[in-house]
Image (cartoon, rainbow, N blue to C red):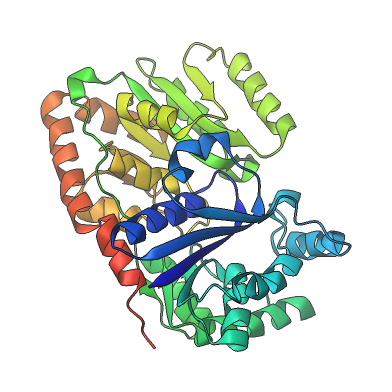
Amino acid sequence: MKIVILVRILWTAGAQKIAIKEAKELQSMGHDVELIFLRGKKLPEYDDLLNEVKYTIISETGNSVLSPLYEYITHKFAPDLGKEARVDYNLIRKFPKYIKNKNIDYVICHDQFAGLAGYYSFKKFGIKYSVVVHERLSHFNDSILGKVWLKYENRILKNATSVFAMTERVAKSVEDIQHVKATVNYPGMDINKITEFNRKENALIAVSMWVWDYGRKPELYLDVIEKIPSFILYFAGNFKIREQGEEFKDEIRKRKLENRVIMKQGIKESELIELYQKSKFVIRFGFGEYGLGMATIEAIQNCDPLIINSDLGTAELVNKYSCGIVLKEINGNDIKKFIDENNNEKSYNELQDNIVKLSKDYSWRKHAERLIIFNK
């Protein structure tokens, strides 16, 4: 089958990594796969990953005379996102023309806006498409634009051959708001490598490769590491706004944590995996997130026990397989207690054994196979 995997923007984030892994897995299953980004620049962080797949970036900037309007509308719906998150309607409209003579059988669209491009291709050329929903849907009933989008979103999802959701809670939001059934399809969690307890550092790692910002409350991670003086914290990822990153560095200095909080920005995938492998626990908090929190998936792939809060969509998996702690309220003392209880070879090995069990149930092959089962 000739397949296109469509992602709106190439940047360092979970959806992009998932799409790259899907392309690789579907290729290995014998399909002809092209990964298409509507907008973006080649990223040094993803050099190794992208070398494994055939990919195209349609536009580096996506700029058009209407870009300021697209920025305004995007900001209206998602005020916490910067200009780089702009939904480029001009590129969405251009997509069907791009694939017109490629004899494409199927388009996998990562998010509903990419799904709009898939919908236009379906209407114009009859090409089947599916939509992968990464985060919970919103009502958007408080404006005319919002109501218009809800109608389009409904049309996009109802005409898709399949709608996939990254977590149970995301699937429920699709059904509650758009009355469309969504199939839960967790990404693959195949283990990269298992590093034994006695070869790991006394280190926590917090990762947000897309963006750290005030909405993700980075200061809470400093509160935690202050309670655990025998550990260091690797704080990996990029701040959306440079000034916020500088303010966070000031806060680290103010708390005299310069030797115990190591910031890692703009790192390559190989370096990130190395950090996961040498850290004992992955720590990730979410606030109003129903999605994965990509760091939680990468923790499992690197066999690292998890410290998360119950807001994250992966909380159910962590609880079900007993591969970490899920906090109803973020409390440094509770986290310290969990680490003290599990900072020994026997307890740590038990946690890693549970992670291995989880990973066997959620492989990239199973994820890819679900993607090509058409529900309509």
